Amino acid sequence: MTLTRFTYRNHLPFFIFILCYALLGLTNLDTLPVAWTDEVMNLDPALQFHKFGNFYSKLWPNPGAEKVFASYPPLIEIWHILWLKIANPTVFNVRLPFLIFHLITLTLIYFILFKSFNNNYLSLLFVLFFAFDKSVFELSRSVRVEVLILLLISLYYFFQTKSNNPYLQGLISGLLLIAHLYTLPIVLAWIIKTIVKNTNLFKIKYGISLILPTLFSLWLINFNVKEIISQLGLQATKHTPQSTGFFFILRDSFWRRFFPYYNEQPFMWLIYLGILFLAINLLIKQRSNIKSALLNGYLLELLLLSITIFGAMSAQYRYLPAFLLIGIITFSTEINAKNKFLNMFILIVVLNGFLSFTARHVTAIYQRNERVPEPILSFLEQNIPQNKKTLILGESIGEYYAATHKLCDYGLNFHPVHFQYAEYENVYYLSKDSIPYLNCKKIGTYNPIQNNIPSIVSKFAKGGTYSNTILWKVESELEFNRIRQPYLNY
Image (tube, rainbow, N blue to C red; front, side, top):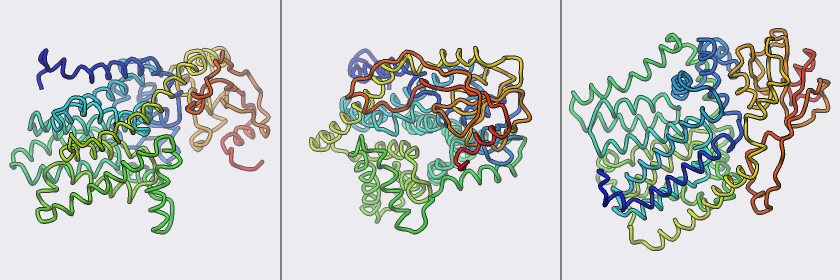
């Protein structure tokens, strides 16, 4: 789509939104949220590769991860490895590309929807509907692989309408293939449609590009397929339904996946169930020509993804954004742009989401002194010796300190298996609370200036701060083991 002067003006409302979104995102990039568990776990294998040239992670508890990392699909690690070649591992630097990726995703979605609606305001409304969804917004700032997944899905659909290039489609499919296990049904649907609808030459070119990311991933771990089966298999079992019995699995997947998580945005529960209902209804309506229904449009990947998420995956909210994205694009061609009731309902959902979105950002601005990472990193710099082999356990900001200190390792106190007290000259523990059963030496407490948050905003003040973070020195193996096993009753 060529953006002539006329069309630029036509899309001006969207560009104003994306500019405001970008400025707000940059303002709170390193403070919303503060460094957290999944962020540093995904970063750690790449950091070890950056520091020592070996692809491993002691942070992950799975056996073998301390020698070669194969506990998670490698796309996000490949990205971090490439990015750390040119950027220092600060909170801002690590998160910046993910903000850019998300901005690109929202832009692609807008133009995909505009092609269906031919209405700039309706296209913007549905982009806002997607962007302000609780799971989409929080995951967009999480430094999790979902940001890359949404980008790849959007790129695939966008380029399908622009260019029928087998190499490009195959490469995007191949990258999504190594993103996460729950993305496999999406890629499977794309492969099926490619095989059925294209020439042999197209399929060969597509297949070559498809396998390249996987081959590179295998090379990264020296083609150690045994470790992939062992580590990734163990990790996968942690993300399957944990309940027993058909009723309890249904309850967890269709209720507890959403509540209490979606108490702020209860209408979104109806939206997700509505997408499922519409997908099944569309399949039934077109049962007389089911092959065409599945091979044209996006219904096949939506159905396969639905079965995977709601039938085979644990009740986690983080699988929802891909489902929501494909659902919106699937039914964009079915939506009547003149349906005032639907448009009003979507507007109400958008306004509800905007309140959550705004409250999070306002809270981060009020609490900036408590959330900004540089002062607490300086606090650690002042209190930890630089010339001794050191381990820091506890709060995730410790990973960013260790990232720039070659003699320092970082570990989660609840994933302790690969760390031994005797291997370090100094062991420290970062905690948010005083711990009565410990007999460690208190080095200091990080207490920045705090701002009082308005009561209406405090209801949304989630994500935590670095305020009142305590640095302890662990002086015995007994106390080290007690920290590593916090759920035991001493």
